[in-house]
Length: 241
Length: 241
DNA sequence: ACGAGAAAAAGTCATTGAGACTCTAAGTAG
DNA sequence: CTACTTAGAGTCTCAATGACTTTTTCTCGT
Image (cartoon, rainbow over all chains, first blue to last red; front, side):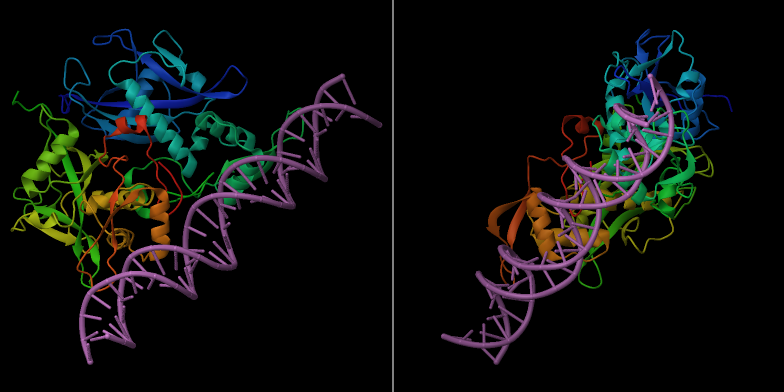
């Protein structure tokens, strides 16, 4: 079954991670790949590729992501299907776009070669096709979803301090958060659990290490998951699915 | 360009409207079409069809909707792209699914013939393919979105009373809402505007007629709209995009 | 014509959660 | 041992919500 089952159908992914910024804090960043063929040859674009017959949509997103950037996301969720007539100058292409989170310490594993590079979210180059539009939309989804769900640890490792978690929120939402209020909200939401251990090697009081409550699983299982349990957790403000 | 550009790609729509229920109040209902060919011949399914080369995704949803049910939705939004390998017993099919709202007084225009019929949301027949899953997901999206946006008037006509609007919310959310609190929330949100006129022919005090604030436009323009203005309005609880 | 009924519309009160802020404790570096 | 830094707990205010009560305004039946 190697024939083309889905011509003109592509699967792309918007990847987010955190990179050390100029002022010491973390900043939201995206890996992009340089196009090696027309149209838009040489310009930066989202990683992606065609859908194979033997894989579902999320698998296609993961596969093309790994193939082009050697990244393995900690979170993957479908964003939107783009099908405007004029998206591509030549063919008519429908793109089913996913967005993904990559742990910041995993980010370095991506070969930063000539054709794969990181860009800060507020300093992106000119993108091929309608990818700038797609990135903007993914960004708004990320910001919105960060406030009412617990995807933030998709940027972090297994364990983390509340300061690290807060840094994720601050980088994504681009505004400072009160440490005290942040602690109160996170702890009362039950999303995070203290491990009992502490981070060592700090020049001050060692902070508590936290991990996410394993009963509420990360990973987007698509529409199916929502049927079981909404798993709604109020974080930072309000509550919404 | 009449050749098949998108084989194995379908666009379907979950339609919602309100129908008079048994207890006098309105109930959420969905029109379904009976399949006339294998697989699942004779079973009820969502209206839909293939994507043509000269139309974008939303147009395809509208077109297939009109063709099969003669309904014209007041609201249309993309739901999700379904691409599981085993969705269809024979072919591999990817479905880009939309969901739509139809005004209740327009609902009767749909020919309730042998092959198009309305079903109450909590009394659906067995559906073809994975359409039951899709409907469940659309339902949860509708309920969620109703609380933080102003899509409710997609069920109503140009003008309406607050009681009618509340009935929409009660039917969708399936819980009674306090009339006083509902009024306060709706009016302070700025989503609705009093027309100055009153509904006539009521056996009691004639209620004020409202319309939606035209400055906040209905209609889902996809990701593009969100870039301009979030148009977030707090309705019923919290605020979120 | 008048009173009953019903719903619109306005008002009251308690609770909750977010945001801004202060204060104490615990560790490290010099 | 002292100064400094951050973790972490506590306090106060305000706005929004939910539950409830009261008043107003209309129609219909007697």
